[in-house]
Length: 233
Image (cartoon, rainbow, N blue to C red; front, top):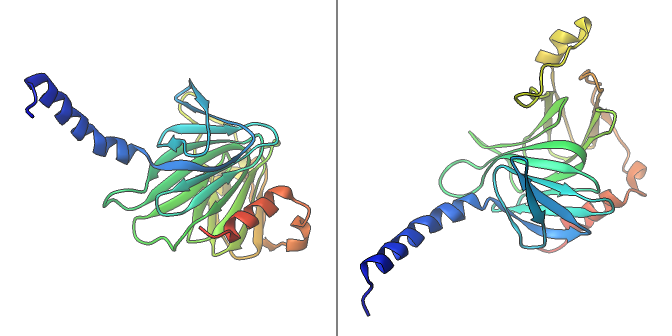
């Protein structure tokens, strides 16, 4: 069987596009309870379901009483609690390039589990308005609270918590009180296993301190994540 000129051209175009589509697919929804939506660059998207592909630039938002798990090609996961919004700013997990993830949490609770220690140019970080949590091979959570404060808790490994990223272009600059200005630009603290740090709404960091697992016994989001982490893959 032979192909006409148009048919051959169409086939070649489809084959050329296949690697690009595979590369664009950075992650997929691997668990969902309730409902969640996806959008990109302000455009309306659609409802997500288990198996939905996600890629760099996508914004995901969970509804009330909903929970979502995003799994990446290396097995690492991000999980969102109810009423949370997250953008995959950078997501590279395929090909020869180093794996790199930068996610921006606007509000809500996030749980992250990285499958192996990051090395070289690899990156896995979660940004909020006031803080950046840079992973060094770990399990941790980030709560972006309604009052703009941020809580980071580390369950395994280490997280380097530093100053927040600048606001998105067009969002304007925020005034910071004089005594805090230098601190906002320069601070970074390493938070170890079973430790937490609270960053105030104005960007002022607290000191890393231990937390008790007993304090989370009645937290359904924590229980769900622990069950997911312990489940066979």
